[in-house]
Amino acid sequence: MKEPYPILIDIANKKIAVVGGGNVAARKVAGLLAKNAKVTVISPAISDKIDSAKVTWIKKKYERSLVENMELIFACTDNNDVNEQIVAEASQFQLVNNTSNKQQSSFYNLAVIEENGIMITVSTNGDSPSKAKQIKNKIKQWLSSSLS
Ligand SMILES: C[C@@]1(CC(=O)O)c2cc3[nH]c(cc4nc(cc5[nH]c(cc(n2)[C@H]1CCC(=O)O)[C@@](C)(CC(=O)O)[C@@H]5CCC(=O)O)C(CC(=O)O)=C4CCC(=O)O)c(CCC(=O)O)c3CC(=O)O
Ligand SMILES: NC(=O)C1=CN([C@@H]2O[C@H](COP(=O)(O)OP(=O)(O)OC[C@H]3O[C@@H](n4cnc5c(N)ncnc54)[C@H](O)[C@@H]3O)[C@@H](O)[C@H]2O)C=CC1
Image (tube, rainbow, N blue to C red; front, top):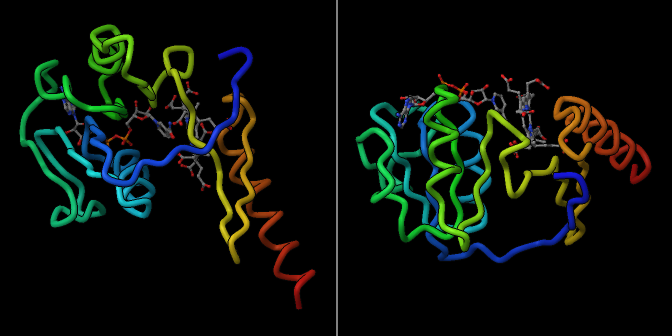
């Protein structure tokens, strides 16, 4: 993504697939559940950091037929070829985040602070996610010190 366009989207009750059930999937799932999405995790194994009571878990390896009706797809497996395949097989109406390859993602996640009805987000346009996290934490510290 050379020139990303920032938007906020309503994902409440939207069908969202997270393929893979490891650490990265757990972080993405937590963010999605916090905004009331209908999350389906497709993965032979699922981390205990994922609240399996709050998602639909399909205990299978990725197959295109399992994500055909999903509006957003997060490709979070630890197999780059599978993540690439998920992107290649998506329809033109499906947005896909390939968590292992930003060049193949049609959207990125942001580092987010949400407090008192205000949302502050940080992005490095994919260049350095850990820097985005660091800057977010600095802003958070600054916010709490400036309010006290
Ligand atoms: C493009 C993007 C797409 C996306 O996933 O949305 C992406 C991609 C990749 N991340 C990678 C690595 C890490 N990502 C994090 C953390 C976060 N990553 C997030 C977003 C994004 N990550 C999007 C762009 C964000 C921007 O524009 O700046 C955050 C902000 C939001 C979130 O995930 O919800 C969240 C912080 C949440 C918070 O705490 O606030 C950490 C640190 C950690 O886990 O502690 C590491 C390890 C250290 C490192 O490498 O930096 C790799 C390499 C994988 C590999 O090669 O192994 C890729 C793949 C690639 O770069 O192609
Ligand atoms: N975008 C981001 O924020 C970040 C991305 N990454 C990348 O994310 C990927 C995943 O990392 P982790 O979650 O730490 O790995 P992990 O090893 O914790 O989890 C991988 C998961 O994928 C599942 N899986 C493997 N093959 C599958 C298949 N064919 N179909 C469905 N599920 C399958 C496994 O069962 C496991 O649950 C890596 O490629 C890593 O480079 C890493 C850090 C941050």
